Image 1 (spheres, rainbow, N blue to C red):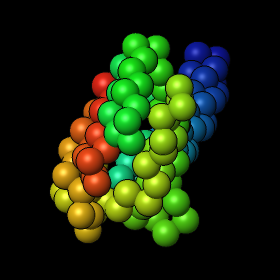
Image 2 (tube, rainbow, N blue to C red):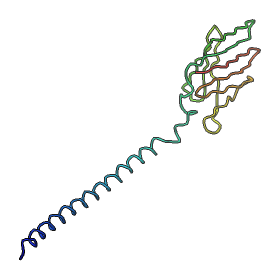
Image 3 (tube, rainbow, N blue to C red):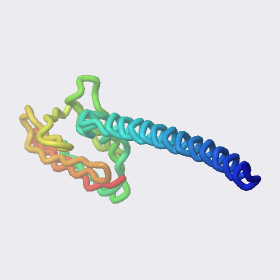
Image 4 (cartoon, helix red, strand yellow):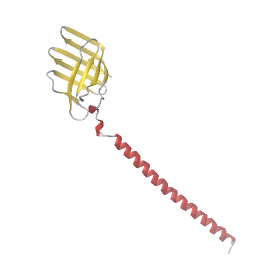
Length: 154
């Protein structure tokens, strides 16, 4: 047997073992990669729930600032730098609107969900238009000869 055949056979054997280890490592990384991808996909779907509708949460609660007006009971109060603090009552369907500048509050205004992310005022003997979203609050509410208006932003 020639020396080149011995070294060639030893080199070939070593190369085969290294190649085999490399194939095993590649397969391990492919499997781990698939599990990581599957994990992040599952997390993504879990965090994007349809139950996270802003109309079902306190998304609209907070302070809105802008033009507010009240006309009633012999008072005419207007402020260009007024504010309205919106809170959701425990019932889940009613909201309170606390005005600044001595304007009487609107309490217990009932809303009903219509479609996605929309609340509509219901069950009232008042004439009303109230629209709330993440950035704006618009109110035209008239009851018993009193009128509240607001055109505010966050």
